Image (cartoon, rainbow, N blue to C red; front, side, top):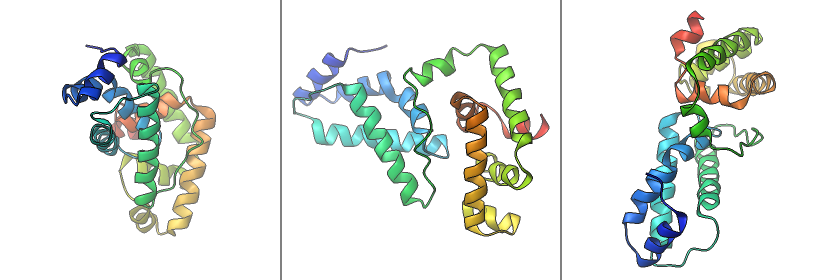
Length: 197
């Protein structure tokens, strides 16, 4: 069930914790998908969004909230996600194109045939990456290895890993729409599919 922002804001002003459940029902899924633009795993995205909700409740309960609630939450999630990545020592790619629509709705409404076509397009684009870029991309994104673990596995420096990863992401972003990458990062495209084709 979707709730009106004004109803959530009224409960927030009264210090009624029910507004947190309403926030969750309205925005949790779309905020998690949005957070994946900046993070490396869906688990991290969930943690960031939950922290934003808790922080919002603790700081804003009993106050009059002014402005657009949805815009505030998206901004807070972006800041928290970027902080999380910097704190973890990851490179941050802030230049990923923004989506005006609701990514969660786009993903949930995707038809099966379109999803299969998107998977195949992603697979082909990954295969077109230069060899080292492809190896680094698959190690980090598909195997979930850190930069350091990837460097050790491929016997290259951490800086070289970062360079290859940045090049891979740039090439994929140049040749695919962002939502295909979201499918991959969200786990809708399995490692076995990408490896097997």
